[in-house]
Image (cartoon, rainbow, N blue to C red; front, side):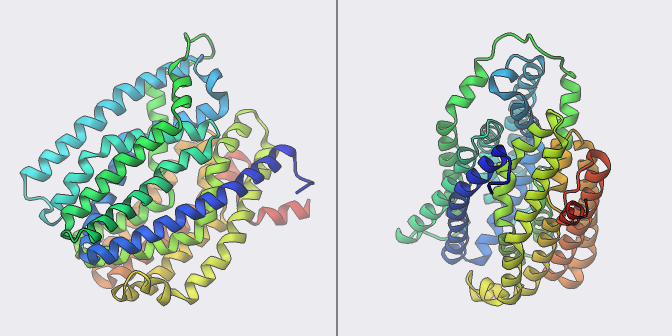
Length: 442
């Protein structure tokens, strides 16, 4: 590590600190899933999973990607510098005008549709619950993005990744210990309370960051592309914001429509277990995101290449042993959630292959979005999404849960390889693990 630049050494030291926190979050999430399936059963868990997927996609759309635009701008200019820019004044007004209004009005319309029609009667209760708290989830999403842009990574993940699963576990255990009904009503109530509590903690932790953004003076520096162009940039971010999990949410929704809650639960658990291969990747991306944006914003391409190469090494070095372990011990891993989940073992194996391939490709799609090529990234992602959707429609009726996994893996192969190709063409950065060979050859 002594041969690394001091700035990069500092990042790696901070990354080491994040590992312990992230593993706590991983443990909590695993415990949360186990307890939810054990307390509420696969049917109720499948109903809640369907509603949570609807919520995730709704929050993605209603954020308009402006949280990611804000994060990138804060990382490049700093809190004090950004608040003096005309760009920030336009962006903040846009967030208030579009996100605040849309995040309240549209969920209420959705709630009226769910309660007033016969659409998805099996999922009416959990859908009603998640629609009611969508404004809260949006608020948490934007506060955490502000903290990430300010390089306060640990604080940015505490609300969603520590407090939320912890509160879900506490709520589920309270239902069990009280001997209350373990139906979808109480499961939805647990989710709503956990969401409110985690959002409150997020606000408390980064109140100073939000205060600095609110205290910005008059716009005296820089030009702004205008609210319309900021909105377009945000929309492109919105297409890629869910990253590796978007296909899994699509799988859950289509499985819920074309099959039933039990198969939804199998897909949800198989995808969640496969995500374990990318545990450290998630930590590293959170830590490096603002630094990648900063390097590109200041024209330091060599530093950007070094950061991308370091990320690719971290991805593969940590992901390969977990991938092999999950492939070999798929049945025991799935049986942790209950005997009925073992039948999803082969689906999990296929999911994990898709996850590992994206790690081989490195931070390809992230590099595009942070280096002013979010339009290209969103187009690639849209095609990957279309591939996933088309294959789901084709394979779910024939192969069920296994078809979902094949569809997801196919979309991941496209997303990783094409994003890596365009990162090289547009940014001049080789994000893949094979950049090590290029370095040695030079």
